[in-house]
Image (cartoon, rainbow, N blue to C red; front, side, top):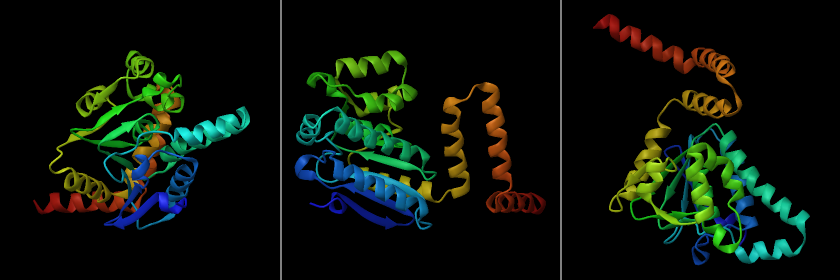
Length: 258
């Protein structure tokens, strides 16, 4: 299976659905799948027909994690090769954050290890009520290292420590309660609800969504005063957009009529 075949693409109503397509391997992440995701996100950045990226998994699971057979081969090639492979996955998390369009994960079945990490790195995580998640790397003597940068920002320090060191699996309800996921979705209408959510998000003003996402993640490295200064810059940028000016004009016209 080629890198392109590892990710299925579909654009409908301004939503680009990217489907991890190794169901026989429970969509385990290998280097070719990671490269395919890099390419798909790069194309989405410049595609005006795309406003939202929806990430899904083919078959019964979202993603079972890293392809351990490939990881073993890469590790046997020495630390430099292994480091380069890890950096490439880390770059994917960075790319997801830098993309000004929302990235939504729709998690069903199992999302474990790197698969859970991939979902965690998305802006929005919708989880089917019967999904099973976890970072079980500790049971292999491994560490959920790359996702820790995101995990530490989403949950408490104590929770992040427990998730990484116990490696226990947890439910969709726990994921939402801890801040790892956004919403629990009923299994009966998961498909329809996920589609409706992504399309509703795609109907929002793209400039507003892009500026909101940019500011949210820019604040990671800023103190309070610097954060306010950055917020003021985003505020001005939003005011100057055609979308905002038209929105204000329409609101004032309606108020005058009322």
